[in-house]
Image 1 (tube, one colour):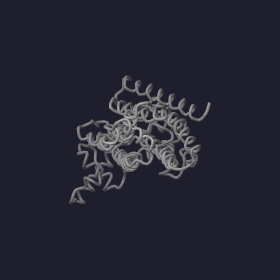
Image 2 (cartoon, helix red, strand yellow):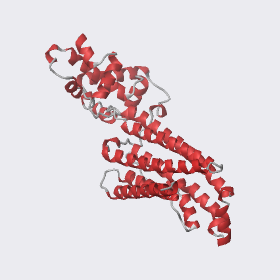
Image 3 (cartoon, one colour):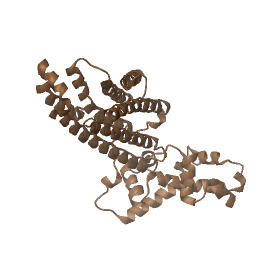
Image 4 (cartoon, rainbow, N blue to C red):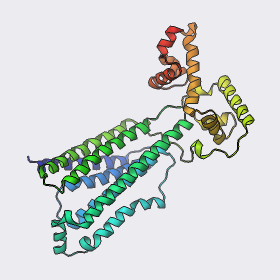
Length: 368
């Protein structure tokens, strides 16, 4: 089997796997249907792009298929937003993301789609010298850079809002999407290298890189979908109406009122211990102390200079320290204690405990 046959085999498998996963995502019952549908569309576009390694007899169809890569990053961007924000909905304005796709096809129309057979043959034979192809590379790279930056900014904002409003240290979604973006950057670097070699005499290396890309697409697709299916807890979105504290700060502030509110908040935390609830959110705490969510968020994140996440965990750690120092509770294991004080994972408890005490829970208990 030569490299071309092997490449076709890999492409066929990758297309089949992408179509299979896309069909599954479109039919499986889940809470976040929009995210599943967007990801299914992304996989279908990926299958169309990967099928470029296969042979076609219809030039128009092949180049129309080629233009679909300009929809992949917009769809993935919308997919990321649908995961980060649980109330996200598609709107007519999102059709603006299709502009590069439409523009590129309009550019191809005069000299390809509407051309006669002889002109199409000439276009195909001199493909790499055609200005339309140069244009496709330029618009593709600009679009890719735009969406990569947009996705990173979306993830950054998501993480900041999450830490300001949630006490549960579950940032798995952020970490996972960040891993995917790193994979995308590595894969795209390989694609750029391949495209540069397209204009050189290193044909064997060009074919070899195509094989690597085909295998990479297959493995990344499988990893991506299996990770999503096996870890549904990853997809805990936040309310899109939540804003960063820095964007809602009041113009004037009364220091006396602020200090009074801080004192009342601390008193409530110490007496009522709402932090014992693992999934406590700033909205729930605001309801309990009868304070507007916006005011409570500003109070904690701005005036106390703490993320809600850190604010709540400080009380949990203090409670854990008290239990660990109590001789009558020496039979309690660290695991039992962390659940008792409101944590839901050993790793997050150990990390937070060491942050506040510079000791592990076990070391702290032995010194008490």
